[in-house]
Length: 251
Image (cartoon, rainbow, N blue to C red; front, side):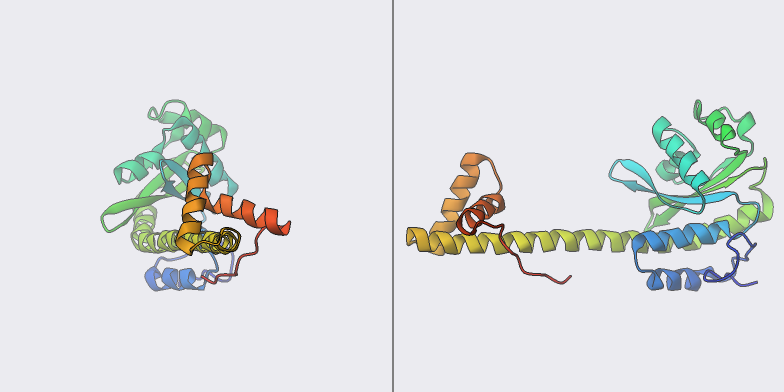
């Protein structure tokens, strides 16, 4: 059976097959980074009916965050690890190693976390690092309600899936970085527009050049410990009685 990510029951068992092209296609067709990563989590969960939940964790600055979960259970137990700052997901994310938990009722690693996992109905898990260019960019976390689940063919299937999915996750994160950059550029352009308006006002009021008007703005910014754009906004607002209007920049 081929991996069908668009139709059918998400819990129906699927074969990995040649998932690379399918995963790349779903990323290109998704409207947002969140949707891209959600589809990866759903696809992994759909590989076997024995998988109770699956999630994708990435490192955001110094903080790990669950960016996708096939079931609320995955998000809940991931958060338990983040709060405890210990767990198989974090070990995989930080070391780049595959981390298997055969039975949480017999697990002695990670302090109190295994006990909390059991109270959520979990008995086993598999955490797989997601890498790009030799750098770990995230972890694929798979959870089961039966012990000794992630062995043999199922473990091999999930490891193969992760080896293909890591490129997709890296691509999605790159898109997120580009979107952040575009937001920063858009904000900078809008600030520049307000500053230019204020410079025009000062040139008319002070009968000075553009460079001299900008120097006035900069001195006011330093003297009041505020951003130049904020000083410019005050000038336009005091003159017109309304906040400045900025152009609509397309990213």
